[in-house]
Length: 179
Image (tube, rainbow, N blue to C red; front, side, top):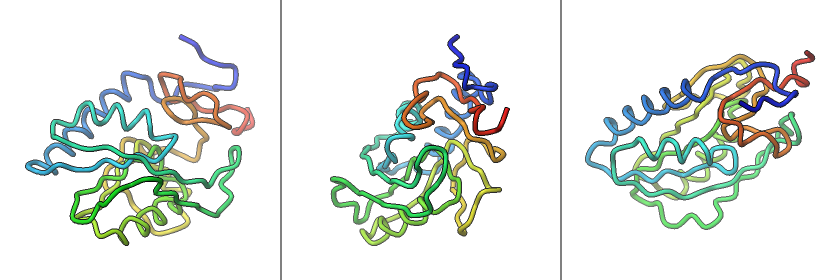
């Protein structure tokens, strides 16, 4: 298995990720029984998670994508830009925001605000990772894969300046943690 020198250690193996995503899919399948949710993936980080998750949700569903920008390198710049791109009419739909991580919470607060203005029937959030110690706004995801400490991670969709998204695990990025 390829482990770049920048990866200090593997935090979650591919097997651990697969098992937890399957559990999240079962929860969502149960909670949305009889409905057809729209999964809105937050590009680019959530793309891998969205694909893995939608494959284990046993419901008819739609997918689309939105984009936010709040990071430069390894640091959040504090300002969140939300681009709903070509998201169509979501009025009256059950919308599930699929995000890779809830860190400060700013992005998800802004995404929720933008989407609520479009009058969905319901709006929930699923995040693969949650870093509650970094929260600077009041936000709690509805579904969480794993809670993690204040670590900078790469792999399985997580990147550092666009690199390492393709790793089949989530690893701790070493240079950020002064190792």
